[in-house]
Length: 309
Ligand SMILES: C[S@@+](CC[C@H](N)C(=O)[O-])C[C@H]1O[C@@H](n2cnc3c(N)ncnc32)[C@H](O)[C@@H]1O
Image 1: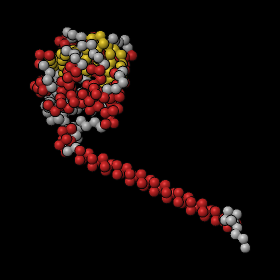
Image 2 (image 1 turned 90 degrees about the vertical axis):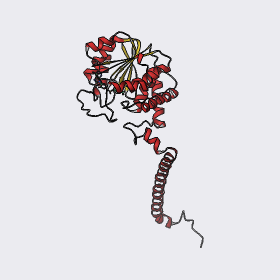
Image 3 (image 1 turned 30 degrees about the horizontal axis):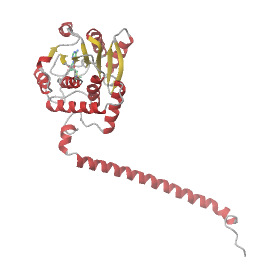
Image 4 (image 1 turned 120 degrees about the vertical axis):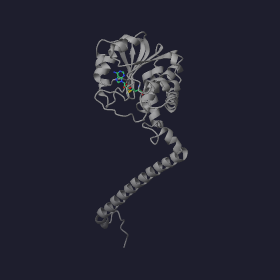
């Protein structure tokens, strides 16, 4: 009897569905095994990262910069830092801003480490303001901060302006109330535990290295005509709007900014686009639609940067 090749064998047709079923089952098992291997790989990667973090970062580091020791951690990841410095570079019209963002990070850490209280906001937003403002080339070193809390951010901004070789003078407008004032928001106690007093603000500015001769603190609300009159004696090259975050409050501040901004001044709208303070963006966008000297330069993290014409 001659052999009938299996292909041609009638049994082949009978067996084919069984063979197909077995093939499909093998495929399914292989795919499931692939998925398990991938999950195990990911778990291994995570464990390696955790182990290397533990080994390369002692607990004391976390106490200084991490969630173990402070309200907002000051430990940007490489990815966050890269994304942020790219955003800054795009707004400042430069090929990159890694070095400048790293310098601002040192300013932030140093100012907060020496001072008491805290700088308000996320690390990304603070670095965005500290880095972008000087890179945009303000026309002079006259700085006005509306809303200072503990004064630490203003100290950092002075440092950053000095980095660009500008001769600074700092003016602060804030009621310096025992707790942060925000219309419609109850803030009974600051998470840092430090009381807000003029002595604390002055001490912080000293720790940050601000020359008392170049500092003036005007206590009161930015909408108060007597407060405005007291500090409207110059044209500011940098104005940080970070006081009353309500739509009406920001609109009022922007109206005043029109009068006191130097030509080419950089105006920083803190918390622009931050969902917790919708009034900041609403008021800014509405203001920019009307008759104004101010133009939007761009946005970094949750701050908008305007330039005065
Ligand atoms: C968000 S905090 C400022 C944070 C600070 N710039 C920083 O970066 O750490 C807002 C500050 O503005 C003050 N403030 C509220 N309403 C104000 C107003 N109408 N004029 C000036 N300051 C105001 C608050 O009491 C508080 O000290």
